[in-house]
Structure formats: structure tokens, C-alpha cells
Length: 330
Image 1 (cartoon, one colour):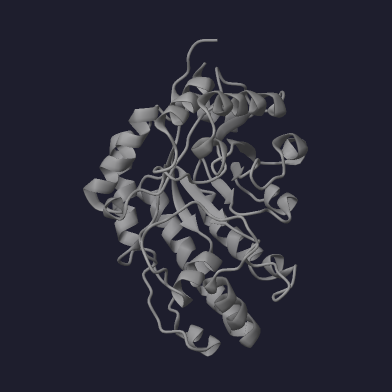
Image 2 (cartoon, one colour):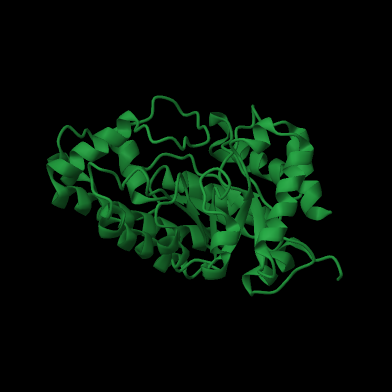
């Protein structure tokens, strides 16, 4: 088979075809001074070129454009619905537009949108620093998670209305991202922070599934939308039926294994490499072995290869990233 371009390779997979090789991408949070502006553009372009990735996940560490003091759940009534181009949103839109001007037609661009729960979590308990690390998978709740549980228990109606307001704001933002040049969004969701003994194990389905689908409904104008199931999936099949083109999760660190779900997963699988263990702690040979194992697990299905989530650039040797890229291209 003749060598394909990145665009041809990715869209062959999205159409259920077998390309010359699996599409590859991986991503990490850039330093705080590379969140917006030309430094952010350069960071994305340099990362893409350094590893010759097949699609670009546009990182989004710009703040949600709302700051309110939340003492009680009642205070969440003050959350406004946004048009999607307020400060913070606009910084990301400018980044998308600049990258689209450089890359449109060369590689697909998917820009990150965080779930309403994640957005509200940062509003009620702002993070202490702007430094991002790969997510922890242990069951120990953080202060922000306990605060969210308290507010939900205090006034469920107001809390849910706040999530719905944020979802509409994110839907408006998503529409503007597509108009700015993104090929789709990378919607990051996480249910293991939501479903617990305090909230109930059906809470995500009851109050967040419709919010996700509202955002994805707007995103359906795009040609490549990815769903990232962060943390430990509890009800993977629910997410595997979402109206999105690609699904990404930590198959090795959190499960389920690709071979266990690929036969019943509607979106294209994008996973295969352990971002928490093998990439930072393994050898290049072990990284390459995970690529080979991913090919085996996928069988005759079309698929993409990536880590299950972000990785720590200070902990991952470049040799391991080179081994990942070489194993996929080889």
C-alpha cells in the first residue's frame, strides 16, 4: 500500500477502512507560559513536527470565563450563560484559528473541551497552581471532589441547573471552535469523580449524560470528534455509544482492555499505550511492545494509537516517545 498523508490515514480509519498504518498522536499540558498566544502556537507546532503526529489535540488550559464566590449551593444561581467568545474562550479560539491557518488540510485538529462537571469543579475550588499533571487513578477524593459532593447534596436542583448552564455555554463555545477552524472537539469527561457513595452510582447518567450530548450535538458539524473518558471508566458501554467519531481512555492503566470492548464500541478506538507507567518508567522496547500488542488486540478493526491520557514531559524520556512513533510507523 502506498504511503498515505496524515489526513488520508485518519479519515480512512474514520470511514472504517484499513490505512497504510494506524494513525498516531499523543499530548501533554504545555507550560503555563504556553497556554495562549504565539508561545502556545509554537509549542503545538513544534510538538507536532517533532514526532510527525497524524492529528493534533489542541490543549486548552485557558480559564473558563467565570469567577464567582460559592459559599452555598444557592450561589450557583449566579452563573451566567455565555456566548462562547468571552475572555478565556477567545484566547482558545485565537489559538485554534492560528493553528488552522498553519495546518488546515494537513492534519485533523481537535480542540479540548472539558465537561461541565470539570468546569464547575474548578469554579467552586480553583486550583492552587496552573501546573497540570496526569490524572490520578486512585479512589482518594480531592478537596474539590468533596466540595462538589457537598454542594450537590445541599441543593440538587440548583446544582443541576448550574451544570446545564455551563453545558449551554460550552455548546456555544464548541460552535465557535468549529467556525475558527477546528475539525472537531476532544470532549474530556470523567465519571469516577461523580458516581460514588455520597452522590449515588447513577448520578452521571442522571445529570451529566444529557449535558455531554448537548455539546456533542453541536460538535456534530465537525468531521472528527473525540471523547476522552478520563480516570477509571465505570460504565464504559454508555460512553461507547456516544455520538462521537473516536473514543480514548486509559485502557492499560484503568481498563477495560481494547480486546474486551472493540467489538461493541461504536466510535473508533484510540488507545494502547500506558501514559502512567510504561511511558515514564518503561524501556523503549516495552513501549514498542505495547504498540504491537495494541495491533494484536484490535484485530481486523480500524483503530488509532495513543496513550490513555496526558503524560508528564518531565518524567517521560524522549527515547520512549521516539520508540512509540517508530513502532507505529514501522
